[in-house]
Amino acid sequence: MNSTTRLVVLVLPIALASGCATPRPAPTPTAIATTPSPPPAVAIPLAPPSSPRPPVVAPPATTSDSAPPAAADPTRILDLGRALLARGETVEATVPLREALRLKPDLAEARASLGLALYAMGDLDAAVEELRGLLRVRPDLAEARLTLAAALVARQDWPAARAELETALAASPDLLQAQYTLGVVRYAQGDLAGAIEAYRRVLAREPRAVDARYNLALVLKLTRRDAEATPEFLAAAEAGLPRAQYFAGAAYATGVGVPRDLVAAIAWWTRAAEQGVAQAEEGLAQLRQSASGRARRSPADRQAVEQAFGEYRARLWNEYPDLARQGDEPLGAALLRQGRAREAVPVLIREAAALSEPAQRMLETLYHQGIEGQLPAHDARILAYLKSAAAEGRSRPRP
Image (tube, rainbow, N blue to C red):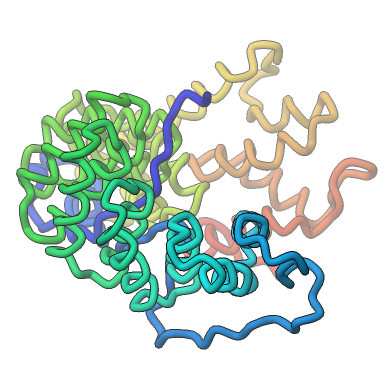
């Protein structure tokens, strides 16, 4: 098993209010650290669309994979439907599943699979109807109840979803997915203490449940318990969650829950920005503005940011203990000397984004000239960086 456990991901639609963190006077973009835009709304695997119910279109009767076997054996037909469902062919799967139920209406496994297929298709009303009918006669089917709860969550029917989840947990307290989803539902109902309790129960049983840890941190931050939230953000950041990496950087930038450390803030924000978290890039941009003197900061603040970027660049060498540095050359230059252009480009981008002028000049040269046999000219990664740098006024635009 990997070092982290991923549950069916439900990300809280939390809008963190201004003032959740108490920033210190610093060259740090405190607005970014304390008022991030809301994370995505509830999202789950097999997430049904919000558009109207799609029509169920049966495939042609001659399709060999989806046509029921000639021998009217409901078990064999059920197996066919399950196989199609496992391949993601949800619409096609409904054909043999319905046929199995026609032949044997009390075949619970077929009805549960049909409910799952309908949910996966986005036909939430039909999925809820099928699963509720099944659970009236087979209340012991935990997986069917969890699918029903997921469909109710997708419909944002929070009271009904909570009732199903609590029923499932009363029968099987070890259902981590049910406990995790209950945290989302309780948050949606405004029960923040209940959401915190649910996530902590998940983590007590499975400390590697990184999504539960991240959601716990969000709710703790929303309730202004930042000192408790920061360790959870850091753990989720170490596990690789980009949004958690943003919040980890924000914590270090403001000194909330950890000693203030701009070098650590830059490192976390860089990791998050490289994975598409726009707010992390905004945080780095504001720090660069401070270092350049374009922001209204004191000389001491400007010097502190410059030193932090310099220390960040120096620490990048720790990841390459086999390389010998020549003078003040960038790490990317050392990689290029060894013919490691594939590694050198992203490293040079990191160094240039951390205010290394030599790295910036090397990227401009590499973009126009490339390296024969290693790197073609007009590399898209370099172009994207040069455009972003130009937008900040750090270089002239390149075609």
